Length: 136
Image 1: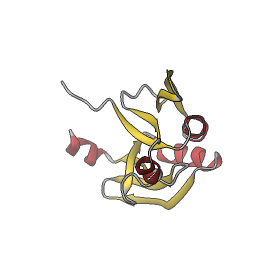
Image 2 (image 1 turned 90 degrees about the vertical axis):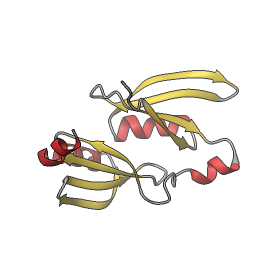
Image 3 (image 1 turned 45 degrees about the vertical axis):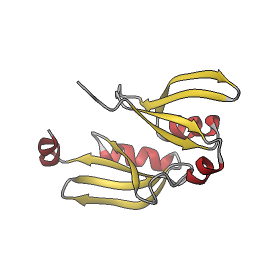
Image 4 (image 1 turned 120 degrees about the horizontal axis):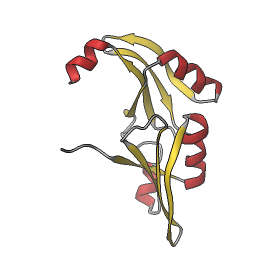
């Protein structure tokens, strides 16, 4: 069996990124290992036991620094699925998460677009049952 275990997201600073993902989004740090030379292996994930993680990768080259906040050319980068859209939307809003597109009912579910601390776009989405069944 195969699955996507983690995706790297380019960040400016490990600690500021950890603060955003844990304090604003409610993620947990699964690992923070010092690899020497200022490099760390930092994995964060939603706190619900999700198998998919984000690997916080500090940009070190000019090319990597240029991609901070624009990993996908302005498109949504990550789809954060929830089982209770309004609970999570309200909690994230109260913690200062910036939503750049308001909640909207789409054929596939309830969705709003938010920005991470660097400007990458994320969907907060509660898929409807029809779309969940069609994805299976």
